[in-house]
Length: 295
Image (cartoon, rainbow, N blue to C red):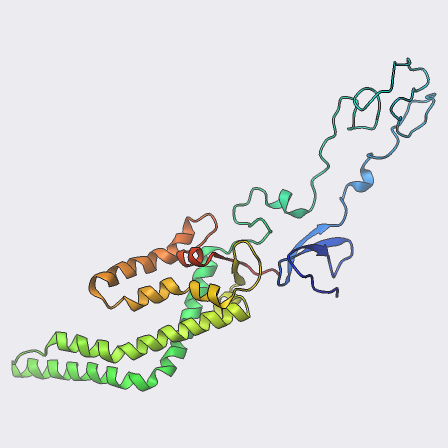
């Protein structure tokens, strides 16, 4: 195994000396290209042109100014395109054509909109959705365990309200004050909300900085990176990606602002459906993209 390169680019393939392999700055990708053109052995560039029998020079390039036997002498040396370099495709009025396209990303990915300039493939929406569902399940379980000490008061508030409502209905008396119940529930659930937000923030930040992906993203074969530079995110980048989610969750209990927060929380992930780089709003805020993990 060769030494790990210092930055992204094309390098000698550690597993196959006949190929080049792309290194994205963190790991070797699955993208390879031949070290030489597959058609190089059939190329006639640099070889002598086939001359008819009886020609004075059998093969080889005719140097500018040289005269082949039987050809009329021209005044002064002749440059390319004037009977000089007679190799096929070079001079002689034919021009110097582009070589055959092979390997690399230009030919393979030129028409693909889901590929970044360095060859990374953008993750599909369904991968991101399934990864988010899996991550939400994991963080919910963890948050529930951490929040056990605060669950008792919330359940007690619910039980007391239900008991009071049933008793009032049976006795034909006045129903309990719903506003007081809502206030009690908000007070009891506030610590649980804070615990959930903290668990989600810690979960995302640690895994994005450490592995470049959360467990949900790893399970779906995706990683998070900055748009213009492959590699793992910084702590600041990871936190930026979560600011929209934290803000919408924090204002969710407020009457009017909470409604706007709900709209933003829906628009945020949906944005990738029409964005050319498949970025959500939190991706744009942090200048990140989610791509398929190189194999």
